[in-house]
Length: 402
Image (cartoon, rainbow, N blue to C red):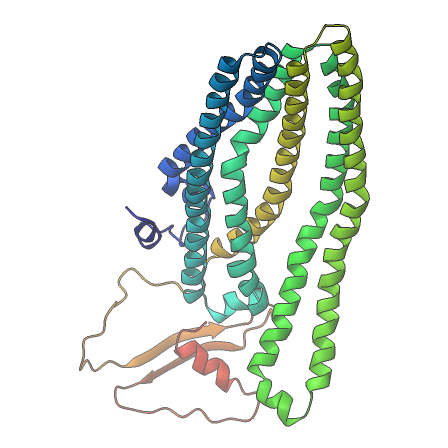
């Protein structure tokens, strides 16, 4: 089954009272398994590479052995080629998974909206619906693409890099007992501060979409009464609110990024200083020191990838919660089991209401109460009354938009 078929067939049931994210992932099980398997192989190659480099230096360059240099060089070249192939395949398949799920979610939202009554739409404004079907859906797709690829690689790289560095030098590895906890604290502080900002950002996008939607629908009125400047001012107000929210993240990153950089550089300086002393005392070879530095970089890379996963997944969790709220909303339009699906051409049917009552969701009193009437086929019915006499309520009740 190709990608297009996956999107068109076996759709998630939008009538389900509890839409779950796993129901979307289950449609891509084989592709997810393929990505995880290739990512595992790629991670093994990444972890093994510093050992090969160490062997080239200690067994090749130090002993002036061309054979060792050529042999290990070929291994390193093969590792690089396989890593490139695995990376290209996993990126392509991960994109199919992420944006395939995005397409399914967007289709389910659209189908759900078509079944909504006006009463349902009173709960969800047009701007928030637009944000959920675009920004929120894209946020989920991007998070899936990143997480499927890095969700396995990051922790494996982090754990095995620590293990391999400990195997090289247990004394030198003690540096990580200080640096890693400090980095984790900084990352958790960053996560704690920025998490509420993501939710606020989506709400500001809702506001901008609302202003844009109002102007598109009422563009003739705006031009007729020369209200362009007023609408521009209104838009800029919401736009500045969104800008300020995004600037908060920039300001926070501006402060914390140098702190992270200082900690990483301190770790590297410590490795070079203490590692150099071990080399001078013949407790560590040059190749082992270079391999240790490579594993140090892998430890930091794995740690930051895991932090990146958290920073990517958290907004997508908020986004899916907003989408789930919409998909789990029960439609006020309920079809009877014996309802007629198709009316044959030429049928002569009457329109009849029996004891129909209606009230708005925020009102305790009925706007219409116990309305009964019958309009025979071929007849016309005129509803006459003063402004505010519920004529419009009657019409929308008849055509089942509520």
